[in-house]
Structure formats: C-alpha cells, structure tokens
Image (cartoon, helix red, strand yellow):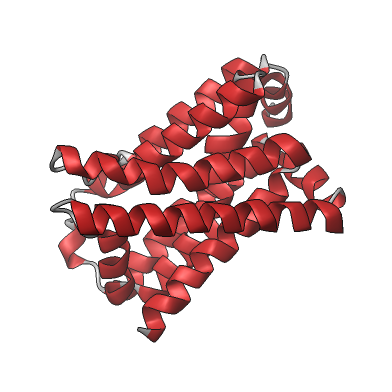
Length: 231
C-alpha cells in the first residue's frame, strides 16, 4: 500500500509536487515539528539539552528523509554526474557570491542602524547553547533541505532560467530574514542572502546538478561555523 501511494505521489505533475514540498517546508519551519510536544502537554522547558537535541535531530532527519525519498533521483543522479569542470565552475560562482555577500554586508553595517542580520545573530546564539545540534543543522540539514526547497522545487515550477534564478534568490533571501524582521532596514539583508541564493540557482541552472550546490552550501555554512568557534 505504501509503495503504491509513493508511486502515485511521484507521478504527480512536477509543479504540483513542488508546491506541496514548499508548503511542507513552511509548515515544518512554522512549528509543525513541535506538534508532538504540544499534544503531549509537556513544556519544552523541562527538556535538558541532551533530549532537546535528540528531539530536534529526529525531527530534522525525518524531514530530510521525506525530501530525500521524494527527490531521490535528482540527488543520486547529482552524485553520479559530478565532474571536475562542473565543480570548478560552481566554486567560481560561489566565490563571486561570497564577495557580493561580504561587500553588501559591510555597506549595510556601515550605512544603516542594523549591523548584523537577525538570522546570523540567532544562529550564533543557538550555536553557543546547542553546538552539536546546530553544527548538524547548519552544515548538513540546511544545505540538503534548502537546496531541494529553494532550488529543485523552483526549477520544476519555473522553466525560464532567468525567472527561476531571480525567484530562487528572492525566496532564499526572504526566508532568512522573515523570522527576524523588526524594521525596514532588515529588508536590506535580502541582498546578501539573496545574492548567495542567486549564485546557487545559477550553478544549478548551468550544471543541472543539485548536488554541487548542496556541497558548496554545506562548505559555506561549515566555514561560518568554524569561524564562530574560532572567534
């Protein structure tokens, strides 16, 4: 029965499937993963750090498994078709994205009342409280899930490359400030985050390989985590 349901889901029009996956992601990040705790009536405050990490790990891995099953062909084919020229191309575009991020962050910090993006500050705080979980979430969970949600699904929805790249960048940038919006100045951080999103989308559009953007996304986040622990 489960196999039949899985087969039926995979045969759904790509655009419908993509919309459903995006909806699932936003429901999850909006608190869907906390429903078991709410139903049980247990307060999060009673959890110690270890069991809190176990719970978050389990919830994140479950979402990764669901998305991995839905887009298994794209992920597997990405690994199979990795080539040095594609990787080199991806690295060059990623470096350009980092330069744009660095310059735009510097300009925002110097010419606006907001010096640090709320998302960045939140990640730093969480890393200091739950370092192991946050390292996993930042380096493994986020690249895998976000590349599927902000690249693969939008690629299936928008066949026009330019429209795909722009929408992927704007949505990626917007989601990183949405939960931390306090003033109009926070909208400026759509630029650095969006620039990185545009670069990852451009890489995917040119290489047709989701795995490359996943790997570069993981490296990017990994470097930030290392810098946090070092400084």
